Length: 175
Image 1 (cartoon, helix red, strand yellow):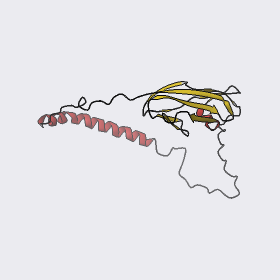
Image 2 (tube, rainbow, N blue to C red):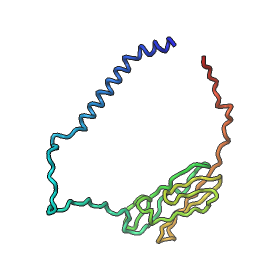
Image 3 (cartoon, rainbow, N blue to C red):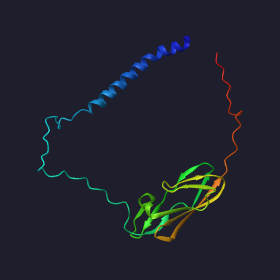
Image 4 (cartoon, rainbow, N blue to C red):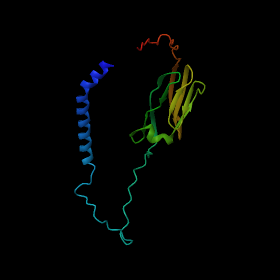
């Protein structure tokens, strides 16, 4: 117990210095949060009914591309272990030459799990989960162009044998 107190006694100046530094940093940050001099908190004029309507924010352009899908670009082979999850990602090349991610055209893509006994597929989030060892296949195709497909082969390896709990034990003595 004496050695712990001695260590704490020598550490106090460090903690005081650290606390003072944190206090100073928080004061500097708080001064930036106050009202800026350009904005005053004077009385605000109420908008009248005859005033022009406020401008509405312009919506972002639609993520759906105008051109049809020309190619699906993604990994053709994946490796997982049982119980692992992975999100399917990739791009599509459009007929106009643009290349966009799956996220932008997900409503135009169709995912199909060929081996539901080996692999679980979450269609909304494009997440695959390996259920048991084997080789599974996922097909990604364009909804309006079923001939346009990408085949993904997923090699699922079995889990390694569990670690013997006696190996991980550590002897600890407490006085």
